[in-house]
Picture 1 (tube, rainbow, N blue to C red):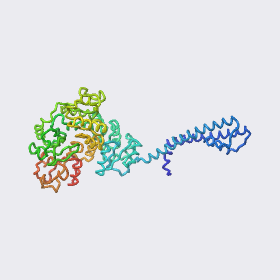
Picture 2: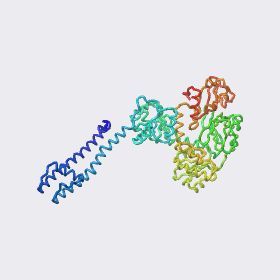
Picture 3: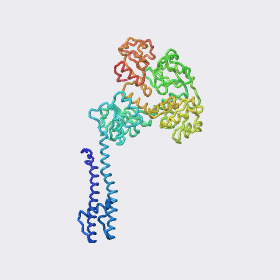
Length: 565
């Protein structure tokens, strides 16, 4: 056994425990010697003579309950003394001493060995790593993405047991309190690429403030559960604050079919506007993109589609289905022309239903208010939802409650609870009650996305995926515009091998999954580039694609992402 195994004895607490254990042992020694002396006195009174070694032998055999019986008293006084020695021996040797040994020596020793096993600092040469603060669903979604780009990461665990569990799973970890500057110094935060804080708003504020004591340059991404916390987190030093509940609520509202088939703008860059529009119950359903001829008729580009929660780059033969959400790119006039054509579809006077009045449910309600779409919220806790007039208090699994909320006529239902198991249950239930209704569901863990789709959800949005994709976009610093979780617009110069070719000949979409939505020839952005346009040197492409598609583009054609994007 190494000397390091007893390093805890050199600490103040270890020395204090050792002194306490020594006192108990000294007390036991005094008790044994006292009983030995008493044995000699009582034996002499009965006319017997024994050596001191025999007295010690008798005392220890009686105290330990062995009691061989080869030496006994003949008087009641002697037998009473034997009982006292026996009872105190049982109490001391079998109860007090083991408890004391465990409490003041064995347990601190085991804890010290465990603490020694949990890493407390990173190597001095560690740099460009990502520091995560919790082992939660968002971290579980971020880690595979970091592994895919060979980026090092470390979880800074404030709890020793959590740190040991992560260490046993071979996940890089450093143990230390999040409000202790020394923890972040040992994690080499001054050379880290990013800090991702996913605790409570209050904890994230303290964490950001602590990190800023050490470094001002390392970006900090903090999650926020309340709109009011965003400013506070930014003041504390957070570089970016992700209000994921609000983002998810707005995304749900854009993709619902409860009010219209209009194109809802989700972002813009100069004259390029990115919008989403549901195809449900429009004449587009059943057609391919080539047959729809949206570019030819109204000058708008279908950059891709959302199909069952996944972004797919557009192809001429891409089929538009009932649950398809179109991702459109075009000028403001082109989007206006799209709305003129499709504004008459999906109009419904029946309110949509939101199951769950938590942060995501209320955020969805606020977004629907802005879109002037009526809704009803089902919530079990009275008074939780501010708008009591449009709240139905009760259990979302109760048929009578759902009927009161208007599910039989509702065009869409949004399931927003934070419990994935409950969301699967409610999705199955709603799909059985209304086979034709649009179901949008939230999930916390990425692994449950496919389960919710199998249960009948048309659109599933993962809290963890949305946060992880936003973190990766900010880490890569490549996107001009993040239009959705995992989908962004970015710039790139025309690759040398494509110079002189037309857009059609370049086959950028087929090779990388990215869609060219505009060209910048230096005289302004040209939205809705024609497939026969030639790609000249010095021209910049404005592309839209998923994280994987963007990576594929730069791997295929080389070049660097614009730092100012």
